[in-house]
Length: 63
Image (tube, rainbow, N blue to C red):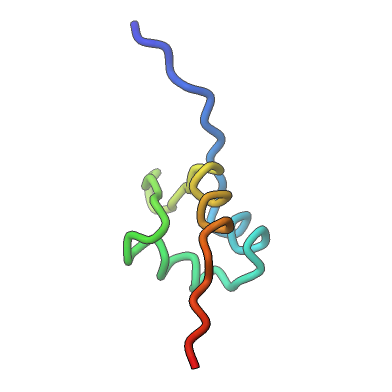
């Protein structure tokens, strides 16, 4: 059997707290594909590596 990598998954609430945004914003990022997630039953789990990668991406200054 193949070895599974050690991936830590976070809940939407944990991601929202880390990113300092609302849970609805996290759901929007997941549904738009900007933040990869896995669905477990009725909830989503986001890989911790995806959250750190999203936080390191440059933010566009629109205005």
